[in-house]
Length: 354
Image (cartoon, rainbow, N blue to C red; front, side, top):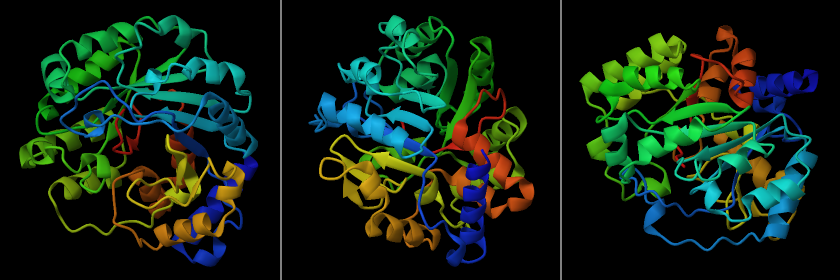
């Protein structure tokens, strides 16, 4: 924990004072892995389901990757997609991997297979299931394109034992008025709520109907009130969301995601915690350790701090916490990175859906 605190302090000084203070060695705190990009939902908010993806990592490489993540000192592992549970070897990978180094293993899921696979989930080292919902029953099923999606997801959550559960919500024009009810539903099943932010800069949203989902001024007020009063988020987060959704001028914070999280896609590409930027390596050609130590990774992470990027809402809560150090940034970053059970204190999360 001390080493992590020192590392976060270096990232803070390097992003807020001078880049000369940035850590000499990049050691992300969280790894996000996509074993598959395929998804069986038909969300109007993304394009994943419109393509059939060829997943390049076989079982053996997937096992080695999980081991490499742990060997790199990364203690938080998150599986995203696509839909992670569509990989038929998913639980075999976890079984054969060394998962002992991880404090938390999170699966971001659309929930359509949780009920069917609940026994495998309960017997696995997974510590948390984050279910993507975008509103109450009718609204959610319309946004997600699957009738019965909401009920099936909630039924699956109720069968889980000994797992932290979360509801990942992307507030939008259609569901803004339902956030209070969604919060009450989450409380009833023992789940905390995590908020994603719509983004126009992510490739898998390029053909999505974001205009239909983009909140109007009335919905922005409702969203901000929910985030402030129910989730108890700091004012700088609600202010950012309000300005962002209202297309106001925003002084974007230095982006620190390259130092806090690493993404690995199903084709092996490695990203510096950001989807709009180009890959900096590929684990089908090199080990994860080699990619993290590469000049390409370091240079892009440094460029992100300088905001030499297209801009997005990915992980904005971490960058905002760094900017507002007077608001206990080190505590915020540690909490956001590890995602402990937190009731009403879940933070804003990247706008990346399962």
